[in-house]
Image (cartoon, rainbow, N blue to C red; front, side, top):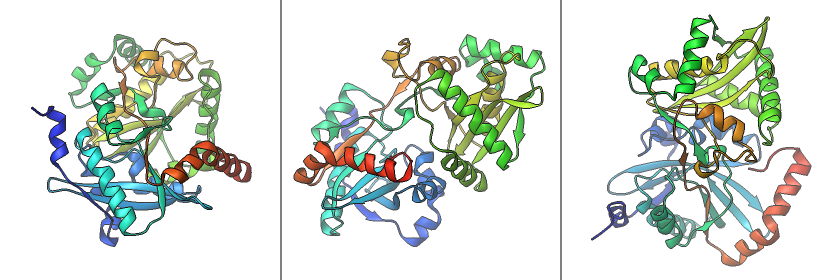
Length: 366
């Protein structure tokens, strides 16, 4: 008897590039995917990556049961050819669809002579022994994870407000209630240069204090925030103390999911629960826009939550004060299409490409 998730093995897929009309309606198409799409597959994000060294492509997978729209980021390298990165994709109904998706990739790339030596995928499939077996059984190779929310805290925000507050972890709930009681005010602020710079300063301060993660350059965030705000998919929230921003958050509504994408705060503040109230305010605003789930966007893996050496430890403590559990996804895998070129890539090519790109531009490669 088939494992329930293996029913998907019966599905077959074809791959093709999206039509001009499909690209013109990209966000609504991505939002119709089995998991409701991901902000890193959006039109706004594609436009960001186009400015930072990647060529965005729009890939469509079709089966008898459903169609999946996925953003592909492409880079070309001398001798090796092209690398495809399906950032937070492919969006599939079940892990059992991954072998058929891989077959569709190989067939499409060969038939269209696209010159791709490897396809990097990172589907939002929850990590399990079964998921790992299916993906690795299709010949895909595990590689280091790239996105901070391959482990993350997710919160179901569909209940009505009072029930939702009761559903929070007691630490978060008590902080929200106290901040409301003590008159902390959260403001939606304009996307001005001054506000963006204030937000970036809060972020870098927090990252330096609470993690060892490298923050990208200001221009990247400015472009990112502007692209999502211009499409009605992003908003910036501040709390002020003594007339200056003391807590900031940039949140995104995309499809059925809200995401706490960026945040930061002054390390010495007097208003208790202010950062919790920012999140609570954002959650309720995004819920009004139709979001049913809220992604706190990055924690340590579930088995490393208490590890103080983990770079996300401090941020993880804050985020799990809302959602009691951490969800681990399968992370990054490479589909190898040219074994020889891939061996060169893994031996030295990727390292050199990253070093050269960073030296030349001062920016992150992925």
